[in-house]
Image 1 (cartoon, one colour):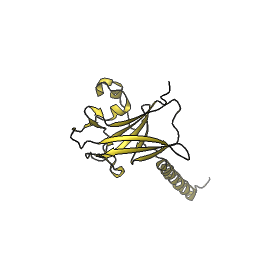
Image 2 (cartoon, rainbow, N blue to C red):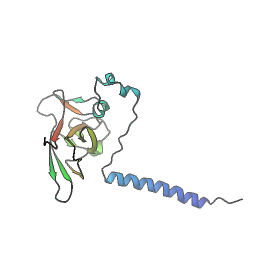
Image 3 (cartoon, rainbow, N blue to C red):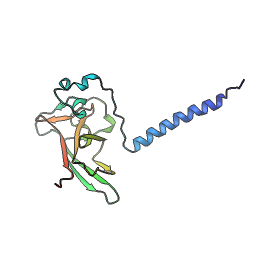
Image 4 (cartoon, one colour):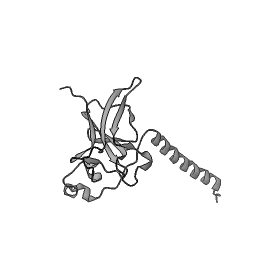
Length: 171
């Protein structure tokens, strides 16, 4: 009968743990977010969310901000990066990026942004600059939306606070 080498099993377990941690560090360094959540059958019924069907609309009900001159605002500029890709610059008003507060309780004018290309979520943004390696050639629109710490979009005058950049506007 063969003896079990517990040192080998221990080293394998340690290697497994460290390789997982390294994978998470690499993903984090490349702005990969792990936002997955379970969908139940209620998400398939559009009446559950007032007829809204896109993921961004069904994820959370918006936070309505009264129009009083202090509501958050956003503008976006897309620039060609001199080395490769594109640089997205966000100009916000009455809004502070707070990556350390993501997932915590809502505070007025504090949070993060989501970047969408043709309604597909690309990334969560935690500051005013973001590098984009490539944009699909057939992409039509880029939208950046402001979100609260608790992942609910901000709304003013029944409109989600967003900046839109039209892409590929050639006929």
